[in-house]
Length: 218
Image (cartoon, rainbow, N blue to C red; front, side, top):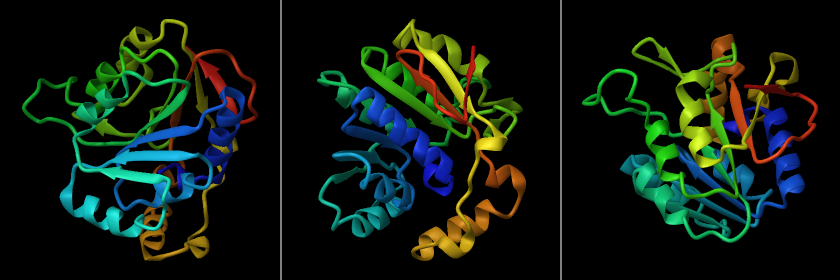
């Protein structure tokens, strides 16, 4: 949910301008807040949500946003739709669930998402809830960290440059800034604990950039 951090929204807009990106592709629509916010920043938003209840809610919420397309599909299958793209695209990976039938360490859906993107070279990948000492996802005592992701990211683009945000650059949206009940619920949750308020991001870029608030890693 990058929309809860105003600094991350500015980082994404700067990347849009640097790389001349018109298409923003999101996995994990949830209640549609992020897609709605990003609809103001990109020509086209395509987002997927597997949960049928969340999909229906988002479809209704976003029906008047003509540049937003919501698809009910699992995210690895959804991402395979984009193998023949012309021009750069931002893939924003925020679908957090895992397959409990797989061995530990292989349950993160983001790993399957990255496999689906392997043939797409001209892209920017942003992964939310990344372990950079800010709030992040942990499954089976395995954090969503660089060691988990690095090999698969380099198979997409061996020249990727990796950046992450820092606590000093976070600018979380205040509860009183909520625009509707969905945002209010999300912001109340986000402000309930520091690790929920300040979340980590991993930015995977095709070349080096200099953006205030982003730190090079890897």
